[in-house]
Length: 135
Image 1: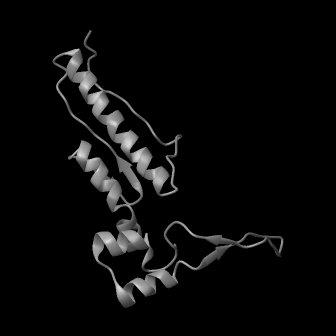
Image 2: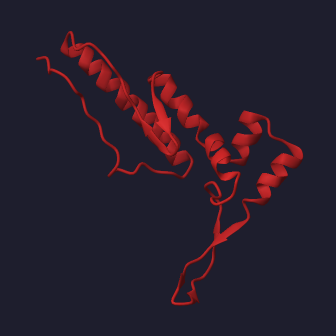
């Protein structure tokens, strides 16, 4: 995230140092008043602070670029994205091209997610074609 802020958005000096100070975090679980061992949290956006939503938007800006490269009319809401592609099924080739476009987009998204140490939620990922099927 720090590299994204610095290289993509020009955040530097004191502002970058302030955000960097938020990255020295640890996490642990407490069950029945017994704490687990703590672990460093070196990835993700800190939650619970006022900067969280803004930092999240910076962090996922590359996701928007990837989607817009393939599907320029897509939209998202908070941490939920939906990919849409309208096409006229004049032939099976049109449908095949549309499906390939969405598959290429999701493949690029998957590669970006892996590079950011993120993953798809397979249980929430759906793909459907609505309309007549042409043979």
